[in-house]
Each structure stands twice: as C-alpha cells, then as structure tokens.
Image 1: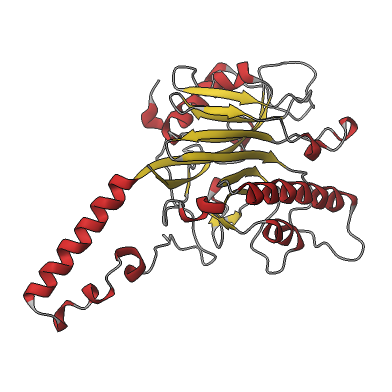
Image 2: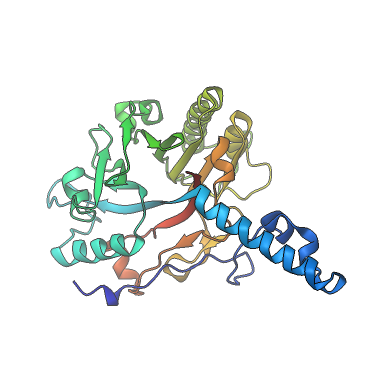
Length: 328
C-alpha cells in the first residue's frame, strides 16, 4: 500500500478563509505574564522566568496523556451490491484500500464513524490489529459506531435508541461507551442526526424535518444532563447535520442549557473537498473534558483526490479530529 499518495491532515480556516490556529493567551498558557516583558527585568529575573516556564511545560507533559479523537462519516460504506439506493456507488477493493490508508494517516485513538453497514465492513478500513470496533444494534444499513485503539479499555453502554425515535423513521441510534482512563472515566457518545435541517430556521412553523432534528437534540441534551449529574467528563461527536455557529440557535441552546460544553469546531469552516463550508461534523467536550481540549489541534484530513466524482468512492465527509490532554 503506497501511503505517499495520501495527504497529511490540514487545518481548518476561519470565516475569512485564512489558515488559523487557536492559542490560549501566553499568560494563561505559561502562568508567568511578566516573563513576556524581559526588557524590564534583570538578567537574573529573566533566567528565573525561563526556568519556571520550562519546568511548567515539562510538568504539563508529564502530568497529561494525549488522546486523539475524531469523527468520520464514511458515506454508505458497505460491501453489499444489492438492496441499495440507486444513487449509491458500490465500493471496489481499491476504494477500501484508499480508505484504509486514510485511516492509518488519521491515526486517532477514538473515532466515531457513521453510515457504516456493519463491523465486518468497518474492519476493512480499520484493521483489527490496531483498532477495536463497536457498532450500534440498529437494523439499518447506515449504522453508527465507535472505533477504539487496541490497548485503550472501554465498557459498552446501551445504545441511545431514543434518537432513532421509531423503526419506520429509519434513523440511527447513538453509540455510547465509557473509556477507562488511568484517572477515571470518559463517557463518549457517537451520533448521526437527521439530515435536511442544516441551515433552516426553527421558526413558528418548522418543517417536519426540523421538528425531528429538534427532538433528537433534546434527547442528546438529556444524555448530556445525565452526565453532568454523574459528574463524568464526556464527549459527544459525530454528524449532527447542523451548523452550530449561529447566534441563539435553538438547537445548540438545547444542549448548552443541559450541560456547558466546548465545541472544537466553533468559529471555523471546513476545507473538506475545498469548499470551506460550515461544519456539520462536530466534537463537543463537556464536564472536566472541556479543559482537556488542546488549542490549535483541530484538524481536517483532506483527500488528495479532488474530482467531485471521488466523493462517492471515498466519502463526501472528511475526518475531523482534535487532541485532548488527559490527566495521567
């Protein structure tokens, strides 16, 4: 497999289209604001400040372990050749090889996956030697799952079936696991919510699609509220099918009222397929995990293939990832 054909992850951009990285203010990062004004201090003080800064950086490295988390909608990933919608492109061996190479390039510890037929198909992208795979128990072709790096223990919680609402709706349940970290637990919920209300407002007469999505957001909010009650750090990640940067958006307000959270994609646009569009794939961190998000680590793994026709063979979504500094 020639991995040189595939690119490294590229950073998101702000609304003006410029490449950006978010950084904490230097004083907050280093804990020594006057070290940033060395000309007003003696050589002895400057040397002391430098030693303090280095010790803080070393201490932070020793006291925290890095965890890379990602979400990736794989666009009707299935090995089936029958019983599919007419517009679904049947994957061939080369397509799976490309996806597998991108998964290795992504190199994440925890990956929420969407639109995957079953675990057997997922293993063609995420080899079992490297990752463990847990899929929802839904009886649909577009299932949600979580991929976890081998050696990282976790417990499986019941699927959040309320999001699927009813069998006739053919929506996807959420997948819920608990990562067993050295210093405690991290609850992780992977979701794929209703399509069709990405940019619509929720006014006095919302569409049926928006009503469904609002109901799903309400269920996710209840899950977040339960985690807040438990006092457990948590992540909610996946395809929300909703931009979340609008001010006073009622969908976002639902979750924020249930439990404060930090959204890794806030204020950025996605460079996936060169479009620089609003993110609909999100990573939310709540509870203590809000402080674990590492500034400047939000990445989108863009594909080397640029012809839009490749969207059906690879995916119309790109992997979105961020790094966490987890207390060790």
